[in-house]
Length: 150
Image 1: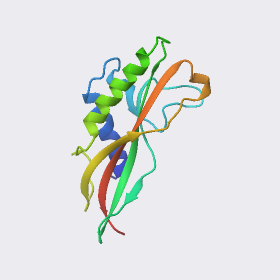
Image 2: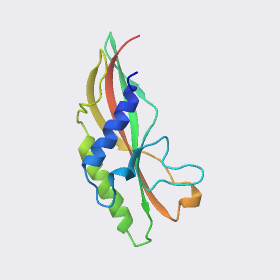
Image 3: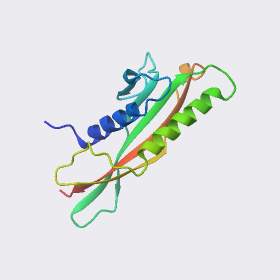
Image 4: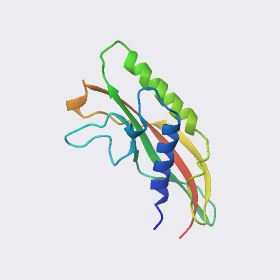
């Protein structure tokens, strides 16, 4: 059985981020997971995870579905004034530039047409127990697909 369209988007985004070779992250620190943390631990690195999809005006025969994928970056908080924030901002900018209005060729949709991706900010926040230890920045990459109705 083929992977769902949403999961294909998550994998394509992970692979695109790995290709950026971001300073400070090894490829194994960039993973598709259900969440950037569990009840007992936090995953330093970049977690690509799914969010709810959106629907937009399609055509008479097709639906425009936006599969939301978050790229959540978590780094250690060294408490240096502004340095960690700047690191996160630079990583976000590189990821955003990589995906905004770009096609992802590795996503296949039988009977559908791939449109583009757009990027927005995610309101994700760290759980309180890690708020002083880590810094987090999360952005949403929305992969728009034109899918057959019904």
